[in-house]
Amino acid sequence: MGVLSNKISRDKLKPGDHIYTWRRVYLYAHHGIYVGEGKVIHFTQGGGQEIGSGTFLDRAIVSSSPPHDPGNPCQCGDQSRLDGVISSCIDCFLAGGELYLFEYGVSCTFFLAKVRGGTCTTASSDSPKTVLYRAHYLLKEGFGVYHVSKNNCEDFAIYCKTSRIVNTTIGVGRSGQAASFKAAADVATDAAANAVISLPLRYLAAVPSSGLATLGSGGLAAVGSGGLVAMGYVGLAAVGYGVKYCASRLNSDIGVRSDAVIVPVEELCIRIQYADNVSKED
Image (tube, rainbow, N blue to C red; front, side, top):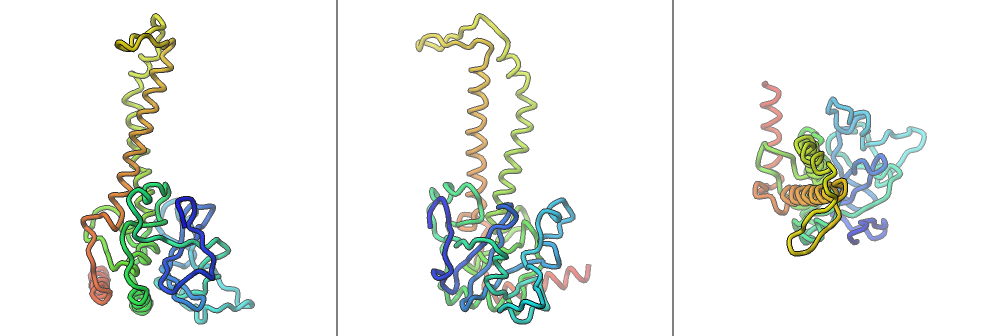
């Protein structure tokens, strides 16, 4: 384990480990809880689509439950249900991808060094026995309706490990992937807006003058056509956007969020059932 890679070999896995594998050329990762004997409990929408968001993502992200070949049975057993919380053999879970271990209890510095979200958290994990109990309980009772940003496979695995949920209807769920995507989208939106607003200023900076600019008592520096000024602006903007991206990711981490609360799995299932009943009535 380290900053560069969380890759792990199968013989190093322990029951209760939170594992994941990248899909579609690292576009996103699918997460689950390893429960031993080559089995993984994980949460997916299935049915041919991972998220069913009604957007272009439906075409880019396929189901995390690969179709089973009837002529080539695996260790999964009964696979009549391929959505919700399911149990699969690790081969079907990986679907040909590499195996990675999600890390818990990392420092804020280590967390920020992982530029891509969905690989670690500052939150501490509960005991393997407790993690396995939650995973098997949710396998029986379910984990609600799958949602790409508010209730996904990573959210499921993180809950099994920590029993923490986000007690708000605002923003994303526990998922580090969703937080990273949201942070990147916010930064991109700000960058586009600032680019339009600051365009006149950069244009003026690029107008040729005497070719020299005074830098206080530090002497003179060649500006020429204003390229140095423009480069300085771009550099400062890039640093600012990088800081905002990192701050947004950290503030969304389940171990840092002030709106994250601990909820026993039995109570969680009661809440989910109540929400389902209300939704059906509406």
